[in-house]
Each structure stands twice: as C-alpha cells, then as structure tokens.
Length: 184
Ligand SMILES: Cc1cn([C@H]2C[C@H](O)[C@@H](COP(=O)(O)OP(=O)(O)OP(=O)(O)O)O2)c(=O)[nH]c1=O
Image 1: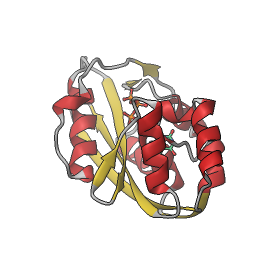
Image 2 (image 1 turned 120 degrees about the horizontal axis):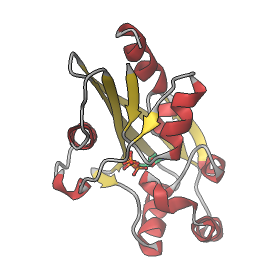
Image 3 (image 1 turned 180 degrees about the vertical axis):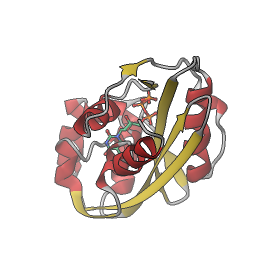
C-alpha cells in the first residue's frame, strides 16, 4: 500500500517521518477560500476534505491531508497574507489564550478516518519590539496565526493544553494509530 501525503507543509512531512511512516508527497491544488465556515472545527475538517478530494485515489493507495487554523475571540486566523495581518494576529494573541485546531483525513478506497484535534496556547504579553522583530524574520507567513511554536514562536508560549503536535500542524499520534489500525 502506497501512502501519499497531500501537503506542502514541511512540518507535516517531518512529523510523518518522525514516526517512521514512508510516503510520497502530492500537493493538492485547491482554493481554500471555498470553505467559508466560521466554525474552526468545521473549517479545518472541510478544508482537509477539500484537499483529499482534490487528489487521485488509485488502488492500493492511502492519502493523508491536513489543515490547521488558529481561533481567537471568535475569529479564525489562517496564514497571514501581509506584514499588517501578521502584526494584527500576533498583537491579538499576545497576553491571551487561543485555540489551535488541526484536522486530518486519512482515506483509501476501503476506509476513511476523520481526525480533529484542539489544543490551547497561552502567550506571554509581547512587547511591540519583539513582535516587529519576529515579523521581520519572515517566520509568520506560512503558519496559521502567524507563529510557529516549533520555531522562534516558542519564545512566546507561556503554556499549552493538549497535543503539542496538533499546534505544529498534525495530531501525529492519532494519525499514526489510525494508519496502524488499517495495517499501514
Ligand atoms: C499554529 C502553528 C501553525 N503552523 C503551520 C502548520 C501548517 O503548515 C500551517 C497552516 O496552514 P495549512 O493551510 O493548514 O497547511 P499548509 O498551507 O502549510 O500546507 P497544505 O495546505 O499543503 O497541507 O501553519 C506551524 O507550523 N506551527 C504553529 O505553531
């Protein structure tokens, strides 16, 4: 059985490697704006499904897709599209607790697993200068919520509740166990 990871996320790729899963990468070509739900849990699972449905599903192949959003104060923060947006997100998260939702779809011709995971992250109060310095590293732009807990963004984090890897972008233990359940 071949495993295809339908993701350009280097984090998702490294997490699968970390638990010994061999896979090929095929990046689905989708317009995530098609998913308009304002509920973060619905948004991530529907976006992961959109990505999964955009991939071919030949015999003896299992595909894995994922999606991650940050949710704060009834707002959904995806990847920032500008310096201003990154600044707005990090300012909002500063000194507060937010949620990170990650979803994964694992599917073959014979089965489909739907995984949704939520974790909470509390930030220290950040100074204007550290926010500006962080934005200028360029790190925020490929990450929901404009920060990477696995990178310099770790310096913002006072505490987390839940699965760390859900914050990084894939609830890897649950994905791993679902794959093993299906003999992969
Ligand atoms: C909150 C947080 C998000 N992220 C990343 C995980 C995801 O890669 C990204 C959210 O964007 P996604 O749209 O979920 O994924 P992607 O665009 O990176 O890749 P693809 O759609 O091809 O699967 O944010 C971190 O790397 N660290 C973090 O702390």
